[in-house]
Amino acid sequence: MNNIQRICSIMLGLLLLAACSQTDRTAPMGASLRPTPPPLDPNMEAFLKDFHRFFEDSMILTKTPGAAVVVVKDGQVVFFHGYGVRAEGRPEPVDEHTVFRIGSLSKGFAGILTGLLVNEGKLKWHEKVQDRLPDFNMKDPEQAQRLEIRHLLTQTTGLPYHSFSNLIEKGFDQNYVMTQFPLARLAGREGEYFSYQNAAFCLIEPILQSASGKPYNELLVEKIFRPVGMANASCDYESMVNSPNHALPHRWRGNGWVADSITHRYYNFAAAGGVNASISDMGEWLKALLGHKPEAVPADVLKDVFTPVIGTGLERPVLQGFIDRDSAFYAKGWRILEHGGDTLVYHAGYVNNFHSEIALNRRDGIGICVLFNATSPMSGKCIAAFFRRWEKVRGKMEPPQS
Image 1 (cartoon, rainbow, N blue to C red):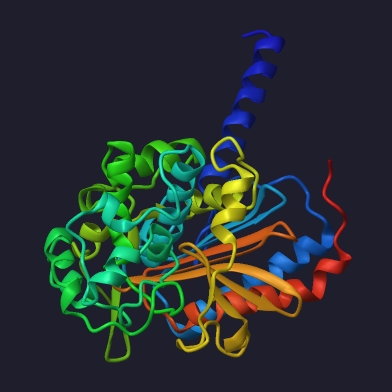
Image 2: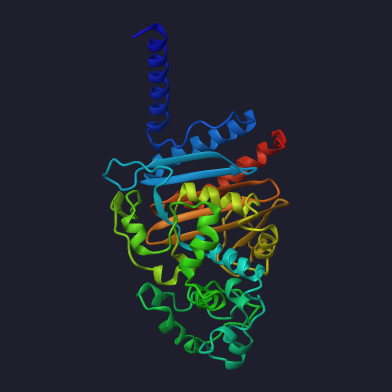
C-alpha cells in the first residue's frame, strides 16, 4: 500500500467513525435524536437547553416512562428529543421514529382534511349533514335538518357533552352509534352551544367519503401523511401493533407505572382519536401548520380552519393557571387560546393511556408537540412551561435568515 492509499484508508476510517457516532448517541433519559443542527441563535439555544432541563428533571420526578418532544421555529426543526423508554422494564429508548397513539390530536387532522376538500370544491362548510347522510337524525328532527357540516367540527351540534363516547369505548361501529343520536336530549341549539363530542365529530368520516369516494384512512394518507412527509403515521390498529418501534401505554399501579396493551378503542372512530404518529411525523406536521408546506396545506385552509367559532368557557379549564376560561375558543378541530396578546392554536389528546399535546404560535412561527406513553402529571404542565419560557426570551431573538 503506497502513501496515498494509506491516507485514503485513514480518511475513510475517520468518516465511518464519525457516521457511527451520529447514529449511536444516547442520553440517560432516552435517545438523543438526529445529528446536531446548524448553530442556533445563542438565546434560542439557551431557551431550548433550559426547557430540556425542565423536561428531563420532570420526567424523573414524575417517574414518567417515556416521552418525545419536537420544537419547530421558522420552518426548521430546532429541537428533537426522546426521553425514557418505550415500555417500562425494557431497555429500548424512545427515539425519533417511536410511534405513539396521539388521541384527540387526530381531530386537528380531520379539520385540515375537511378544509382541503372544501378548498378543492368537493364540499362546503354550510352543506347540511342530512344531504350527505340521509339516515342521520336527532331528538329534534328540525335541528337535525338544520345541522351543517361545520357544526360537527366546531363541536356545536347541540348534543350533550361526550354523547355516546361510552358506546365508542365498548367497540360499537359508526353505523350503530348514529342510530342512537335521536335518543339524546339536546342541550342547545346548533351553532350556539359548545359541547365536546367524539361520536358526532366522527360523522365527518362518511361525509368525506361521500365527497371524495375514498375511505377516511385512505384520504388521510393521500392528502396529509404522504404530502406532509409523515413517514411513520397511520390510522389503524394493525399498523400500530406491527410497527417494530412503537411505545406501549402505561397505567399507574402502586408506586410506579406498568406497561399495558394497545387496544382497538377509537380506531373505529379515527377522526376523533385514531391517528398514530412519531415525533418526527409531528415535526413535519408542525411545519405544515405553521405555513411552511403550502403545497400540502395552503394558507387559506389554515386561516379557515383556525378561525375561532365559539367560546368554550362553560367547559372544564384548558391549560389551567395559564389560560383564562373566557379566553378559550374552539375552531374546526382545534382549540384557539388567547394569552397576553398571543394566540395559541392548541389541542390535547388522550386515548388508551397515551397522552399528547400540541401548540403553536403562528405569529412567532414557533410550535411544540409532546407525546407521552402514560397519563403523566407533566402532560397538563409542559405547554404552559414552554410558552412561559418563550415569552421571556423571544424579544432577544435575531430575526430569521431570509
